[in-house]
Image 1 (tube, one colour):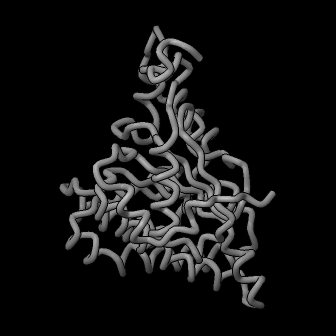
Image 2: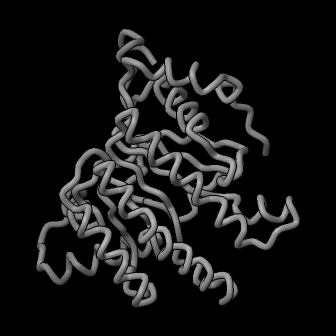
Length: 255
């Protein structure tokens, strides 16, 4: 299904102007989809799409920091991605390692904290080591928290949370207890979930946390996603009326 997003016809400057003085989402989560299709449409190997996607990551991270979004979570590698061909998985792990090493100085300079969630023990030892080094070097920063979901699955997160609750000996389990045992209990729930490439699926991403998130879908493949598209998603979010199941305040008690 093709999505029509008129906001994406506006210039980056026009969109940025519409953000001024508005209540921005505290937490934006993005399903970065379409790398393979981007590469295939150009006659490239799939890994070329993943490599091109790094530029989009840099631009979105920079844009979030500049406008003041405090939390950004990127779905970088799912638990299902381990089932891809071994050569592709190996290339993705090299790309991940290169990113956390190559961006380290930039993250430090811009005071961006790097976090990671998922079953990280499945990552190669060298990747885990460099990831831990970058997270340690940026742990004290608070301008923006960039979280990479790696070897991540929403159902696995809930299973792991239940296991931790059982081990903790909690006798009464409610929503707050479950939230406290998720991978990143100190993160606010996402306000805005963005998915690229025109797909309408949450793909096992932050299943608990996105219960009330607004969703924005764009036809743009991830390697072509730029600050302009992020701004369009946020402007769309700002223009919506969030009710959380309650009656609209603006409707004067109706709705």
